[in-house]
Amino acid sequence: MDKPLWYYARDGAQQGPVTGVELQRLAQEGTLRPQDLVWRDGMAQWQPARQATPFFAAPAVPFAPPPIPAMAPQPPFGPPGAVPPGTYAAGPGAYPPPYAPQKPIGEDAGMRMILPVGRSIWAIAAGYLGLLSVLGCFGPIAVIVSLIAIRDIKSHPDRHGMGRAVFGLVMGILGTLLLAGMVWGAMQNQASPHPGRYRY
Image (cartoon, rainbow, N blue to C red; front, side):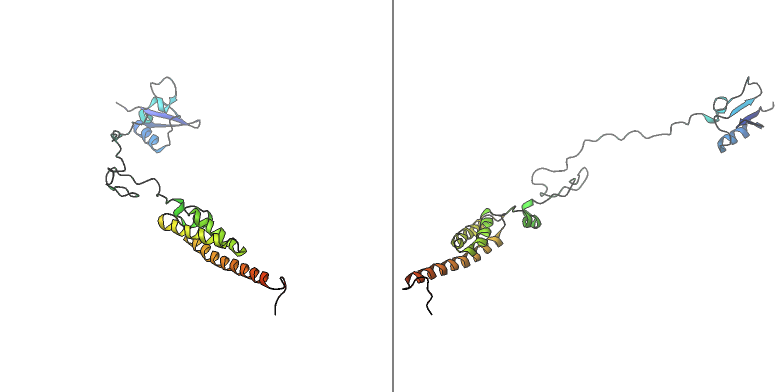
């Protein structure tokens, strides 16, 4: 029995005759496209190759493994005290923290330079009073507030501002000495026989 011969039309030009094996090879190479028309003896009319031949059947769905079974998520922490704060337990089911834990804003030296965070309120007041102590009258107040600030910082180690407190203390002492000198000078001036005049 003779094998049927096929004819195909590509871009309006008739090609063939070719054997079924040759037609299959042309389909695999891409020379014969699914929309190209084919005909063989016994067919009533030309038909698209995808309908008339088995060469363009829908591809079989490739084998896919079954989905992974769902596991209950493991917590990223252990019982209290099992893992130190700021760390996580390594091992199956342990997850690292999504971001590095940040230290409080009061412990960041750069932020303390910009904002008065984490600083003793007494130290802040001592610093400003130390600045104003050059006027003299704020000197004794700066000394008292600075001593309170130093005591506050020593009793609360989480508070900062020792530099301001010491600055306030030093400037307060200088301001107090200035105030004492002004008071002494005023008293000497009042005690002189001619107030407001200088003695040479």
